[in-house]
Length: 430
Ligand code: UD1
Image 1 (cartoon, protein in one colour):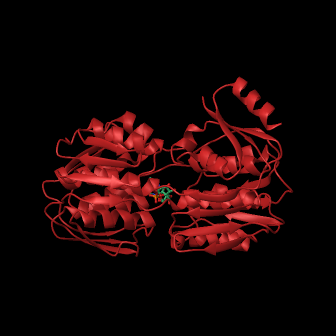
Image 2 (spheres, rainbow, N blue to C red):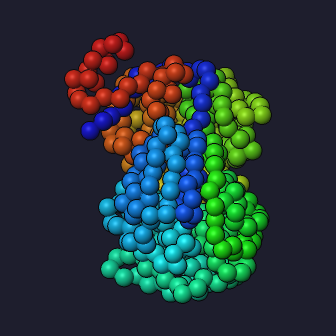
């Protein structure tokens, strides 16, 4: 099993190039099979989740031509509405986007129901409510969601809770329904807008993405397109927090600064300097970090996917901070690991109360999920001594070349596969 071994203490300094947004790319790939013509998608991040979804799509008949690490051509004309199986869903939860795309295109879809995951239970009731509002008959059968419609007819949907997945899934199905669909209380995340732009570039008629009312006028069919995925705001934010925690000076490049406003605001409150450029953001952490309060919220609020990284920064800030998790119920699992690195954090229900300590000390820790894994790496980078992060397969799901990008900023980090390699690293790091 691969691990990261890190010798902490070096401030991160320099420039880092941000990859395409994983969460946007997953939905865009699933939507690409909604036409029989060939679609080209560029700026894909080269990460495990993307490769797992491409495999799931190949399994149902999509022809995928990999042009290079970041570009694919997809042809969906051979796709069958056969069930997306348990194996695919286990590897990549976002395979559920194939429900919306297949239902829209073939009026039939079956996808294994995803179970809960490490950050809490992940229901699909809102996705199902949306498909039903479009006239589909949806049932849970043998552990799968099966949706079928003779005709999909536009409808009016109010989402009781803001859900990125439900918004995108319903938007995809409605793009090929008859007539008008309105999704109220829709998610406003940048990737919702990116998927809408992608579908529109294929001939869909979607307005209002990025606001809380999305209006869709169904079209008969979609056509080929060439599309480039937006930059990953969560990867960018992760490097911004890594700069803060290591008292560094990092410029994240190829970003849309507007998407990073909530992150930037919290870094400023914590005492960092943040400079915005057209497509880059520079974070300088030259002063002591200060405590603050954070609550995760749907966009444009502070992203839940940045919560563990923020906690790591506040763990070494002066004073007492609180981090409230309002989206997922089980997203503080990593706190026990961080405590082993010297953090002083108490979790009460969905609030972490953080008493800042002077610094972390290296320890052997285990990544419990993707973002918490990245956060533990950040803690390791700021810690005194050696940190070993186990279970990095979670991190590799969503961060392209994480170790190499960090190394280019001066971090001492290496991917290892054995105790011997760890010892070699320790010897070299001194
Ligand atoms: C997406 C992101 C994930 C991010 C999350 C919130 C992808 C692949 N994943 O996940 O990284 O953390 O948005 O920004 O893009 N809910 C229901 N019923 C539903 C659907 C959701 O109750 O049918 C609840 C969820 O339990 C959660 C909240 O709504 O409490 C938000 O979830 P949602 O926005 O749907 O998250 P995902 O789309 O799964």
